Amino acid sequence: MNVLVIGNGAREHAICWKLNESPSVGRIYTAPGNAGTSCISQNVLIDSDDIDSLLDFAVCKSIDLTVVGPEIPLANGIVDRFENAGLAIFGPSKAAARIETSKVFAKDLMVRYGIPTSSSETFSDYDSAAEYVSTQTMPLVIKAEGLAAGKGVVIAHTNEEALRTLLTIMKEKKLGSAGNRVLVEEYLTGHELSVFAFSDGYRISNLFAAQDYKRAFDGDLGPNTGGMGSYSPPTGTLWNQEIQDVVRTSVMEPVINALRTEGYPYKGVLYAGLMVNGSSVNVIEFNCRFGDPESQVVLPRLKTDLLEIMLAVSDSDISKLSINWDDQYKVAVVLASGGYPEEYNTGFEIDGLDGLDKDILAFHAGTILNEKKGERIPRVLTYGGRVLTIVGSGATMKIARDKAYDNISRVDFDGAFYRTDIANFE
Ligand code: AMP
Ligand code: GLY
Image 1 (spheres, protein in one colour):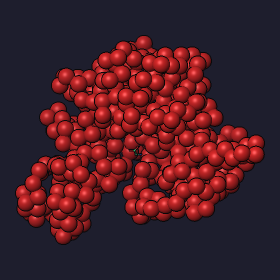
Image 2 (image 1 turned 30 degrees about the horizontal axis):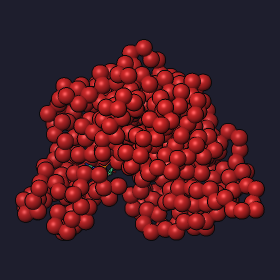
Image 3 (image 1 turned 90 degrees about the vertical axis):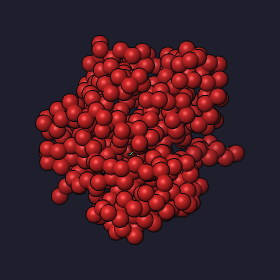
């Protein structure tokens, strides 16, 4: 079967790598991909947001399954377009993807179906929002409704900060139409957990989970990023049987049932960002796709053929599947460009990739091949903020972590940095 993977991050490299293990997979194309995906698939120079060209390509190359990595094409209705053209695709429809693309839609659904989440008020004009925050105790969480590439959530510790945030989003329109409506939410405390399930619109698979480190620097300091590291499976009280049962019965099953009842059956992988505090679980957000860097630690643990799962999901019937996971620990550390998530430079040569241990996975994100005339082997250059995810495995979290760190220290480029405390519980 020919497969098209859409996206260019380490998440998409991990998806490609896992699909490549499937005996039923013939050719894999990645649009647009990166230096890593070019080693195991054919990169295609089509932007992941260019749905018209992706559709033409899929028809022309007789693609049997298209897999959508990032949220933007899902938000723009790529699944509806492909399905209308009779093509199999993995991901939710535009209407179902609103569980991520509209925080107001998601919050409203959760409230109506009794799914545990922080209390919240929605505003579309600055004056009412400002009046409301002035009556609340801090901290408060202020969220733009739409997709904002990680910049749409501010935790305000003072009334002034809350008002300044509302002004920036609602009057100055710094986030464009993503900020037309704003949610002002109760601040939750606890540990964040990313939980995933495959769904065919009716059923959900067993749950799988990871923990993501969103802040740029050690000790959870610095600005929010796309994610600087992750590990799976989470341990101890964060992911015991009791928590798993609560997440399944009070979050994942109800939201899949709610979406179907409302007329938007959800097919794809559903990602719940949760706050766990003792035995209490609250939803922070839903995403309509795999996480990054969570995919880099969960997909290597998957023992079942990913192609079979994705085909069954796209065919609306996962009832015959049994999805199994390896219980080895995986720890992922992201190597980023100096300055990320703010301004950074690219085009630096990456050294040391050929000196990694055999059991280490190196998933590429912002990388590009530089094929120079006269040079036999192309060089790998940096091309983005998050550059690589290095994944170590082991029978204990410590073994996995030590391997990841031992190997990431062998890779370097100008300005490279990484967090040194991923999965460190000591
Ligand atoms: P989101 O884009 O909704 O995932 O929010 C980004 C980050 O903001 C989350 O990963 C949390 O760290 C934090 N956050 C969002 N909502 C809340 C909340 N209600 N209470 C505490 N932290 C939150
Ligand atoms: N790791 C956070 C995300 O994928 O949204």
